Structures are given as C-alpha cells and as structure tokens.
Length: 197
Image 1 (tube, rainbow, N blue to C red):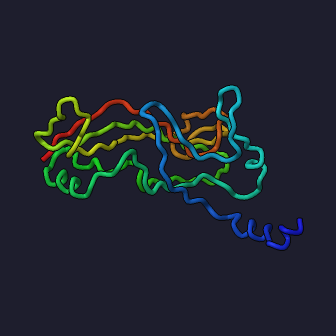
Image 2 (tube, helix red, strand yellow):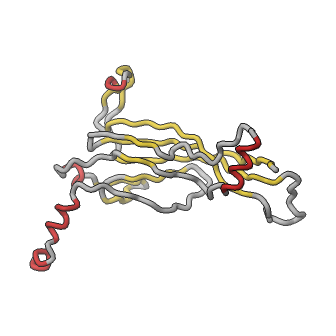
Image 3 (cartoon, rainbow, N blue to C red):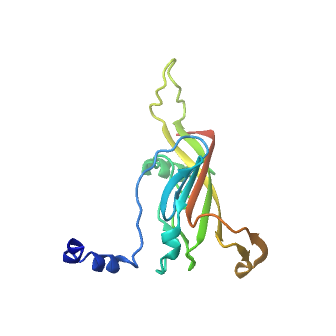
C-alpha cells in the first residue's frame, strides 16, 4: 500500500523485530482459584475453553522466546516502610513478609515453544496494632494494614515434550502439548492476622 511505503511501515517493523516486551500494570483478581498468563497469538473461546491461535507464531522464523525477568509481583498493597522497620526490629519470625518470592526471578530458554508455570498460594494478611478491636457493628479496620503474602513453586517444559536430562533429571518426562508462554496459577486459602506494636 502506498501509505505503508510512504510511512516506511516495513522498516519500522524490521527495526523492532528483535526487541522484547516490558509489561507493567495492575490486575484485579477474585479471592478464588484463577490464573493469568502471557502467551502468543490471538486468544478466543472455543467450547468454554480459552485457546490461542499459534499458527503465525510458530511459522515466524524470528527467534522468539519466553525468556523473562519478573521484577516485581505482589498481591495487594505493599507494607509501609515504617511497618517493615518495626517488624525487622522485633526479631519476630514474620519479619520478611514484605519480600515477594518472585521478585527478581529470571528464566531463560532458546526454544520458541516453551512453557513456564508458576503455582502461587496467596494468604490474605492483616497487620493489627496491639489492643486493636473492631468497633461493634462496624467493618472499619482503622489502624490495620491489609495485604497478602504468597509462596510459589514453578515448573518449566518444552511443549514438544521430552525429559529434563540436561538439568540432571532424565527420569522426568514431559507430555507433548500446551501453549508456549508464562502462566501464573493462583489460589487464596486463609486469612492470617498478626498483632504488632
């Protein structure tokens, strides 16, 4: 098209072909089992299943991969610096609740059809000052800090199947299938209430 030629559209695409993505944002999730993911291709629903059209992604000869770094992932608001200092001074076993286990995590692959999965268990956490009491009939939590902690396990595999012999686990076999990408499956269980000075 003349407009594309005039605006050098093909050259702009070629100059960005080897660039990666930087994703930042907020997602509101319910306190139930759920997931969010980053995967190639147009997504759509088919018979109540979420699927991706991978045809163009797999045919593309460019060296795509889902190598990634998670700079920060948290559920809920961060603890204020003042509260972190108080917890750290107290010497209590819960002094690292401001640390999110996936922060700074990096994963690499040279394979285009590769799947990274993170299984996250989220615990709602309320920090209450000592002597704090909910007022009768009130839902106010004045003086409290409500946030979340989480633990995580991870799994990675080629969608073409195979084993983990390169990582010293040749007995671990992976089935063929799935979608390349980075997937986060989460579940929220209980509420933890901590009373501090």
